[in-house]
Length: 139
Image (cartoon, rainbow, N blue to C red; front, side):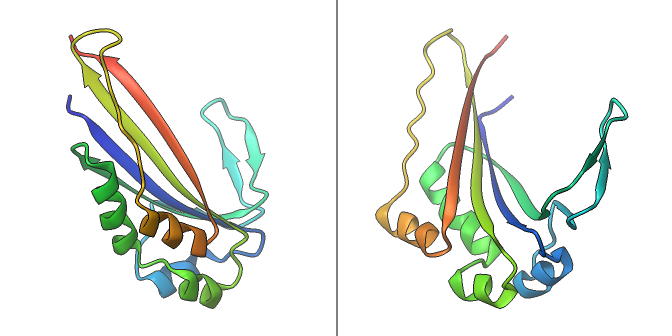
């Protein structure tokens, strides 16, 4: 298994209408639901969704985090103007999951940084940033 990076853009809002987000961004979500939707877990527990969600997730092979963030943000077409056009977004989160394969326990190194222009772009859309890193041993 190779190293990979999974990036996601999650938009939350009590009155968020996922179809409206899709129409504005011209991107199909990976997951979406309206507030009040019922989700049944694998253990048959029913959960009431307290917020609407529109989520787009993409997995990339490779390890250049900073260049993939640019590519991903361009792919989603999401900016401040579109956030205002959608209007019902209460929270934005750029999520990342980085999986590093290593031969030697404790030898994995992962440099994660964002350029100032990327931080400015994310600040303009008032985005939270989530970064999770997993080191797994090969073999």
